[in-house]
Structures are given as C-alpha cells and as structure tokens.
Image: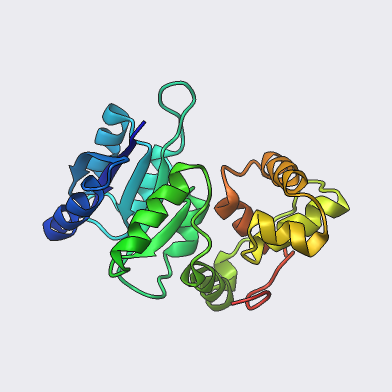
Length: 225
C-alpha cells in the first residue's frame, strides 16, 4: 500500500516542490496540501494520511499547536499520523516543543531530496526520525540554552536494562547499535524498547528522547554527535 502524505506549509512553492518530488515516488501518494495549520488539521482528519509534513511557523495555527491537536486523539481504528516538522533554521527554539507535542522528528527545508524521501520512509514504518545529527543537535541546543523550559520530570520505574536501553536510544543509537553495545540480540533490544515506550507513554523514540532529557538520564552534549 502507498504511504499517504499530507503537506502543510504556508509557502506555495514549497508545497508544490515537495508534492512533485514525493508524488513521483512509486510508494508515495500525496493526498492533500494545506496553507496553514488550521486547514491542515481539518484535512488530516478528513483524509487520514499516514505522514504529515508540517511547517513550524504558519499563520492562523502554527505547526506545533496543529501537531498537538492532531495527535491528541486518534482517527479511524486508534490510528495516528506520523508528523515530520519542517524548519528553515539549523537551530530552532520551537523544536523541543514540537517533539513534546508528538512529532516524530524534523527536517530542514533545504535538505537534499533523498533525505526528504528517506525521512518519510522512516517515519511511515513507525520509527522516529532521530538519525540525522541535526535532530540531536537541535534538542541539545534547546535543553542547554533554555533549561527553564526543559521541565524536569520523574520517570516511571524502569529496570536496569531498560534504563540502559533508554539512555542509548536518547544518544541516537539504532537497535542494531544498542544490541552491539549491550551484547544482546536485536529482537531483545526491540522488546526492551517496546516496553520502555509503553512505560513512558511515548508514541515513538522521539518522545522517549525527550523523557530521557527531562528525567535527567542524559544531558546536553552527552553521547556521539
């Protein structure tokens, strides 16, 4: 089945360019376009896309609030879309709030076309878009520059192994890299990650990273760049 995509951006040229690129991919279908968050929210509920490309700054309703509302309740059979935030800036103070709102990651608008295609593929299969180094740099910059906005929270009970896995997830490790680091099977890592997400009430790895920072398990600058 094709990945159904909704593009929400207040710049017509951006929408047209992304739609042309993604629509040309055999496994993608661009089902709608919107010029602001309010229209995007309405279209998302009507069209039930798998992935939403959401600009951060837009008139009427910005991308963060639109994402928060969109992911506050499921549509269909308990399904949620995956949201990729789009930003023009290499470091954007809104990024941390976007992930806390439920976004699965974010991408610079001037990223190479191959990165955009890969990003949609990654989030469509249920993974968080955390691999690009810019994602971790944005989160770390925000936590470091705005500590008062990084609300400290108490994490739910995690076993020692689950804590180790969460720390590695927050440092940007893939399941394969976690398996190698902890010398355990890949399927075991997958099970640990699933349990951690369940205990945290996190939709995906992006929100788990936020929880790890807010719970004090990792600090800005910790782990590989």
